[in-house]
Image (cartoon, rainbow, N blue to C red; front, side):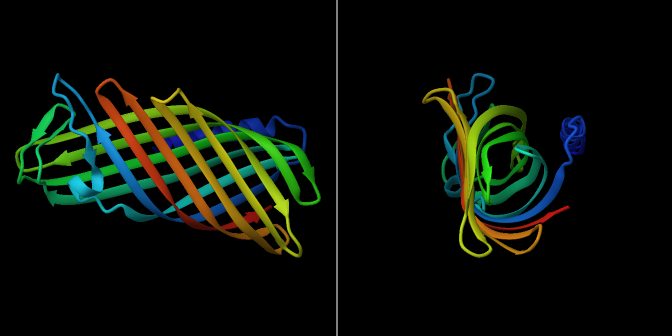
Length: 249
């Protein structure tokens, strides 16, 4: 995970310093009060997977809060940014139905401990067609990388899966100035492969700038990942309010 984060930061730095323009650098710290709604199905070794609701079937605590860090380099109408948020959920339950996961079977009345860890990296480029008097509108091209580790453990059976997924996405971003020191901003990015697979990540927030180059925001974020391929399925929705502090240099 650290190597991946360093690689992303290196790419972002190269893209910026190749520009002749003076870059404005801003860093953000976000606190996301999220709720997870997730179903998964993993088939392996000829054993058809069970469709599992993480909260209902495995007792996973789906209400978790996360810290996210972002760094943005801005030069004129161009922006390059990197963001990282480590996501983690766990739970334990005496299961009330038989479960097949990644080629292993877990019988009714078995005590199962579950963990799901996702490192979510984002490296993006934004070009603002409109940028005037505190208002802007632009397009975003972004690579999103998910480093996923999932495990189900019992006294008898243990199984874990590790997946690294990269998704190229496109989207739009906007900011609209309001009276005084307020503005509204938002963005949405995603990709679709038809009804069988799609991903969307969007947010909207109200921002206040009490000091030059300092912003405080509150908003709402929604993220959805859905994929169904043959006998495998993931349906993950993560949403909730966030607060953010941004400082520019």
